[in-house]
Image (cartoon, rainbow, N blue to C red):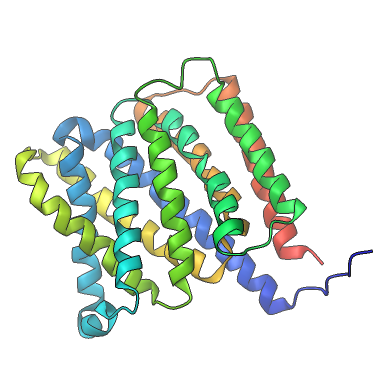
Amino acid sequence: MPPVQPPMTAAETALRGRAILLMIAAILCFSLMDASVKGLAPRTGVVPALWVRYAGQMLLVVLLVAPRLRQVARTTMPGLQFARSVLLMGATAFFFTALSLIPISDAAALMSINPVLVTLGAALFLGEKLGPRRIGGIAVAMVGTMIVIRPGAGIITAESIFALCAAVCYASYVLLTRHVGSSESPWTSLFYTGLVGTVILSIIVPFFWVTPDRTAILLMGACILFGTCGQMLLIRAFTIGEAAMLAPFAYCGVMFSMLWGMVFYAEWPGIHTITGALVIAGAGTYVWYRETHAR
């Protein structure tokens, strides 16, 4: 008979709940950034949108940490910081390209395979435990995603491959973020994700630059704001919470994207999308309850 686990302390329960709320807030910010990019990319192209996202984040971070910039820029893991920054830039580039080609809810549904990759990777590479409740939450949420995607219904196309590539890059980035989180300040990780992306894209963007109009400038500002806030919230969430525990909540992005698609782009979801979103919400709620109230 397996040993009975002792009840969680109030501090442990509060920490898990905080990590989950930070994760949901990060996904909300990223979904708003994606909605901004959906409108920006047709006006400026994907590469300028990418550059704005990273250069804006870099400028904002430097302004916020200016008095202690030297301390923030100090890292004991330069190789890992560079690798996770490149992976995030790749995920962003692939996903921005997908947003310019397919509806935002479809891109989010395809991208949502990454929690499965995160959970498996956390068990294989980080030694995190995969209990039946976490596996169950992931499995049910994945069923909800399959209801949205409807294999064979034409959503998975050549253009949608960009979203799947984004999921692989993003899952790898999350695992590295979790790995460095206990040793590096969240501000240090945020600084390097902005720095690497800004340097690389600043070299490329002159060949793709399009002068933005007034609407594009507003969308650029929204992209910078939501992207930076989302990145900071995500880093903080994975610093204090286990990757396997937080993974199911990435599925909230499907519901958020579905909402913004309706509000901003008149992309009305069908019954399959709504049903799948409800299944995803139920799975996330279950994991949240078990992780914050389990004995």
